[in-house]
Amino acid sequence: MNKGKVYFSQNKLNSKGKPVKTRLNTYLYTLVSGYVDSQGEISNLRPASDSKLGFANVSVATFTNDGKFMYFTTNSDIIGENKSKDFRTFNLQIHRAEYIEGKGWSNPTELSFCDKDYSYAHPTLSKDGKTLYFVSNMKGTKGRTDIFKVSIFEHKSYGEPERLGDNINSPRTELFPFISSDNKIYFSSNRRGGLGGYDIYSFDLNNEDEKQQPKLLPEPINSIGEDFSFYLMDDGKRGFFTSRRVDGKGDDDIYYFKGFQASKPVLNLAD
Image (cartoon, rainbow, N blue to C red; front, side, top):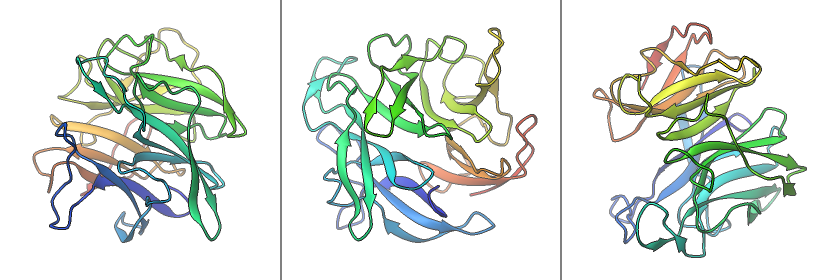
C-alpha cells in the first residue's frame, strides 16, 4: 500500500493479450496500482512501472511511509552466474526509485550491496524505514533462498546484509517477507510441517526468546496449494495475500481478508 493505493505485479502482456516470456521460458512482470474500497475490491488500475524505470521486468515493491522512495525487484542489466544451474543469466536485483512531482518514479538505482552473480528480491521495509528485509541466494545462504536484512541510512547508503537466524530461515526456501506495524515478520516457506506447497508463517521480531519458532497461519489463509505474499494493513485486521489454490480463477490470485487476529487469525476471504 502507498498513499491509499495498492500495488501488485502481474504478467506483462503482448499485443494479443498473452503473457510475455523470456528466451529462458520465464514470465516477465509489470507493476500496477489501483484504489481499494472497504470490501477489498481493487479498481481504476494504472501502470505503475513504465519506461522511466528502464526495465522490462518489475515486481514486488515496498514504499517509505512518506511515499518518496520505492524499492522494487527487477533484473540486473549485467549478466552474471546462475548459482543453481550451469549458465549465465540476468539475476534479480533490488533497485530504489524516487518519486518526483511532475515526473513520477525516477532515478532508479541498483542497491550497492547487490552482486550480479546472486539474486536479491522481495524487498520490504520496517515501519521506521531504517531496515530493509529481502530474500537472496547470496553467500551464506543455507536454503535455496533465505531472508536477510540490511540497515538503511537516509535511503542513500546501506550497511552489510545480515542473514536472519535459523529459527526463521530453514534448509528449504523462504520468500516474500513482510513486516507488520507491530514488528512481526510474515513470510512464505516450503519447509516441512506445512499444509502443502508454500505456506505463510509469522514470527515476532520483538520476542527475544531464542527458542521461538515461526507460527504457521491456519486455514483459510493457508491451504494445500501455494500461499504467499502476505500483506497486513496498519489496522492489523485487513490485508491481502496471493494463492494458487483449487478454487482460484487464474494461476496466482489475490485474496482480500478481514477480521484478522494475530494470535488467532479468524477471517473471511474474498477472491
